[in-house]
Image (tube, rainbow, N blue to C red; front, side, top):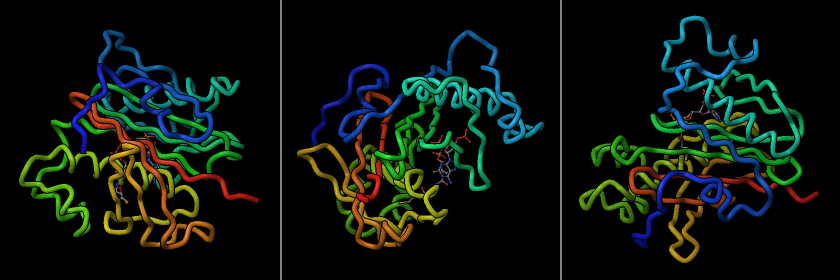
Length: 234
Ligand SMILES: CC(C)(COP(=O)(O)OP(=O)(O)OC[C@H]1O[C@@H](n2cnc3c(N)ncnc32)[C@H](O)[C@@H]1OP(=O)(O)O)[C@@H](O)C(=O)NCCC(=O)NCCS
């Protein structure tokens, strides 16, 4: 794997890289001096619950703000984005998308349902990534050989993040829970993407053997993944 790293902070270009159709992107800094979390819609407040601690409230609100920024690129303004029982965001009709946050940043991507059946985004801070001891829980045997936990955790963080992005892209389709062993990822150095082969069906149109592409960008302190499922050809 190349050691080239993305310079600086996460950018919309990092998220758009490799995706075949337009997406809207929202990126909100979490560590700002602005102490007030962006306002939430009532349905979002209800999803958060009255007992959410301040940090969770702030992160959740910044994720929703990033999601509204992303939707605004398609001319959808101030949409409410509730949360379904499985934790997934509920997007306005005609759209799919995904949210992720770290201690530094909240990120959302959205796309048209005509273009994508699912989108998944994930950011991990390298300093807080999975430990080598966790590798066996995250990796299938072939992945273990690529990750090589003895030589460091960067590849492991990359693989872990890519798997979480896959989960977020596929779960909302038919609410099938994918475990870490339910997809096998192969790194494609030439395109800087993972190919993720499903080992469990996540819906009629996405059977065992279906392959998703997962864009992976490595920064100095973070790894970012965006996965997509193309809309089925009619
Ligand atoms: C749900 C999960 C993917 C969230 O990832 P995370 O790294 O913990 O946290 P992130 O900040 O990146 O993402 C959190 C956001 O994910 C989204 N999310 C939560 N559950 C979701 C689901 N079932 N489907 C899609 N998106 C979901 C939400 O938008 C959430 O933010 P919000 O509550 O503020 O709206 C993770 O906790 C998990 O359960 N992973 C196990 C399943 C898995 O990854 N399998 C690998 C398959 S190959």
